[in-house]
Image (cartoon, rainbow, N blue to C red; front, top):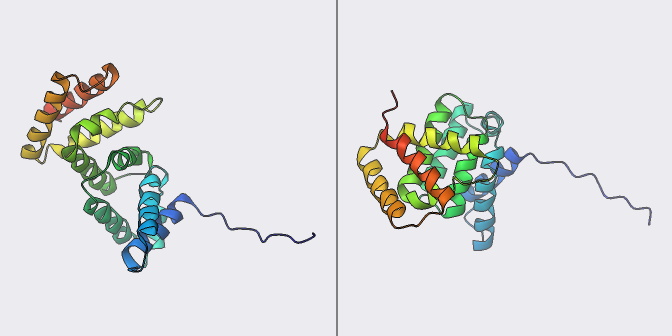
Length: 186
């Protein structure tokens, strides 16, 4: 056959996240499978998200409104599963800057408060030490604003360290996280 397939347009990771998010918030007729797939697409795309590109995709007058809307949607998804927590942690690899960094730090602290043990276990990710160090810094930065939630999460983390819930590597990262959370930022 001499028939040729039409060229398919490459869709950026950011566009894929935007399409999935748009479907979830505007389409009430999605099947459970479609909702799950779109939800998963958003979380798995966080590490590759170009926030500035995302801002240009929205219909809002100001690009920041689109970015804020996605951040709000992500926050509404709490409590997070273990894979969602890891996806949020990997999201620090995206082009965060300025107010985006502050808002993203709040997502991380929310994930930490919701499940401190899983959050700490996820920090052990081969060859991504710099990324996870950034996760710890951002989490501690925002967690300081919520002393009651931070104290409760630290108690859970301490209990897990004491009862052997962590491997040696996980315990090391959990102690580093704990150190950042208990040391004043200034």
